[in-house]
Length: 538
Ligand code: ACM
Image (cartoon, rainbow, N blue to C red; front, side):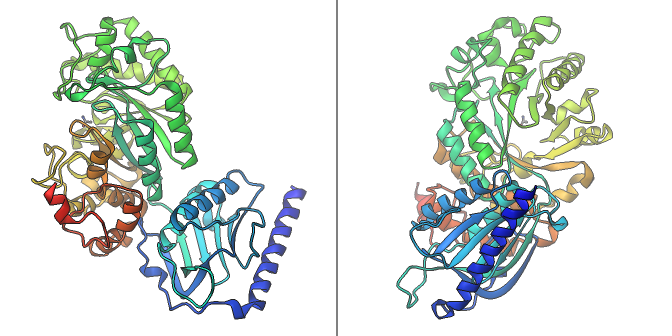
């Protein structure tokens, strides 16, 4: 404790010395043209922005300092330095002197301020001499860093100074998310996606403060995660995919690598094993699981609703126990998703019996059960979570049980829905979802679901029609950027006309990240190399 007070005092003294030194060197201060922090192209829009119309000059005389006696802060500082290096090719030292004299600092500070009394809250104070980021937790600092990344300009400006300078608009930002759960889902079962693909998706999502990635790891067409006690699941069940390509799977080391990468980005991975329906790949691997009365064969089509586990066999539950145990052991997040959707060939009573038994298994391994909205027809616990995709009636049942609901209504949030009739990929059974329709709705007031029951918003990306990262990006971007704002920003701060302009200005970032986004003609994209004309020619 004493040591920590001394460290704090020394840090404050150091900061004062830097600020005084900076003031003494006023002659070195660059006169930037006036800025307006409130007009920056931030997504999601922060809670409150107060511009002070000057600028912090980021240059080679800038250093990052962080609180060092609180977990994770120096890593967040390093993360920022790495991203600045990648964006500007500028080296900014972290908690060290570096090669150059220090004239300005970015200080990432652990603060116990009550105003910041929520895990992801942060404040940014940007002046000519310093950027101070305050947060209670490293997670809050990580969210704040994304804001800072978005206001660091892509280009340096011309000044009389001999070094390159990137002006960051000055002012104050106070921010805190509207929903603590802001997610996307990736279906790696219909088509398999590599660890590298998933990592790139995590990079992009976390830039927009999305904090949950739900992985749909099994379905009729493929089983995608190694289960050591049941090896045929991946040997047989992982051997193909929609369209008959080679399929694939994550071994447990791969999965751990994804989880570690997500953790570094303050993102929770939710594993989903879909059951009792959507289980053809599991039943082909181990036919005793099968309950639909037919001999299962590997399936490469896209029909749904024909498979089921045998819900009245004890050995089926021993199998599920092993699967939940092995996956839970390598999943630090609090959730386990059991699917539960479209079990059209499972008798209603069998389905209810199944969900109630599996819920106990999930709880035994310390996880909170999530299931698609159908699960609320069983007597599930109020701590379990219903993911609303299709049925308002099921959502109401979940509310009666006191459950939380994740909002993923297919007609609003399904990323695999086509933008319009010209879309190269995707389906349209729920709706066409153009970029404006994806954004213009109000989760807080969706179909009368009380705000206190809403855990958050998740945008699922099913992969029947996409088989590589370019196609994934075409469907996810730009719509997922809108879902980030729908779940982070309060209703009063959301406005389509204003969002449209900020979205148009994401093009340089998306281009730099080589994201093959759909350049919707509804948006006046800034300097994108993918113009609408090019997209139409494809
Ligand atoms: C679903 O789209 N079957 C959850």
